[in-house]
Amino acid sequence: MTVKKELAEERTDWAEDRTVLAVERTFSGWIRTGLATAAVALGLHAVFGPVQPTWLPKAVATVFLVAAQLIFLAAWLENRTSRRRLSSHAARLQPAWRIGLLILLLSLGLCGTGLVLWLL
Image (cartoon, rainbow, N blue to C red; front, top):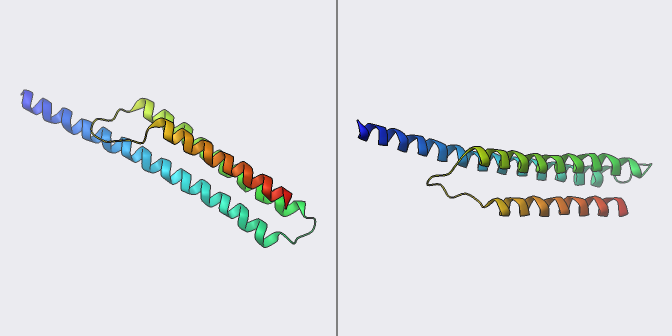
């Protein structure tokens, strides 16, 4: 009977590891979506830049940059929440500090992009 219990616990641990890895894949998806949203902002500004008044394409592009920032923030918060609820057994995860640093750098990049956008 104990062998069955050990096997069941091992399968449960593997299932939790798969879920933890799925959380990381989901985080990556959020980041890709945020970067694509930022690319849409730059594309809109490039295509509609000559439109008058000049602030209009900049404002529309800024909306997409703000959306990208919100996507990054949501990705970080959801990742933190999921990591608190789950524990890894054999899977090796990205350290939480590295994910936080990535979000910080992406956020700074978005702010810089917005600043350059308005200075053009």
